[in-house]
Image (cartoon, rainbow, N blue to C red; front, side, top):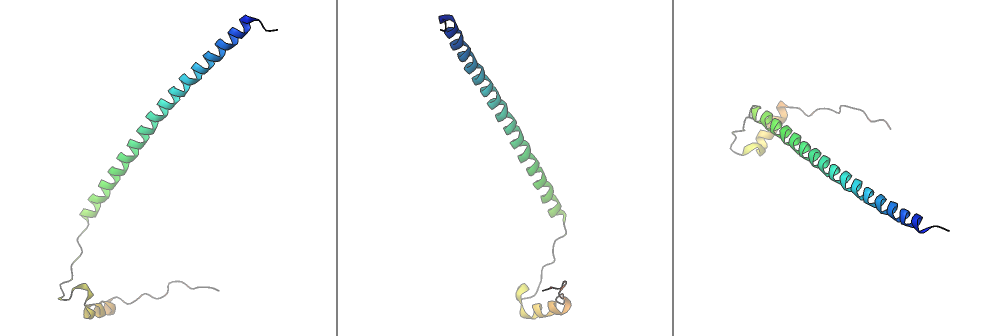
Length: 97
């Protein structure tokens, strides 16, 4: 039969085990949240930096010349002339059945 002392010791060990497990859970949860927030902020900062770089490179590109025709770019005559200047490319590959 178990003595009264051994049951008290087992209860005390179980309570200590639970308290240590809870402390480690709180510690790992806190560290996990800190790492997650650092990762998230660094990711957003790098994305913002890349977007600013891309915006600067787009702004540095030369502007596209606007068409001065009275009907705009959808003028049928203008479309016909553009087809004369830029022929439709032929099929660049062949299909095999």
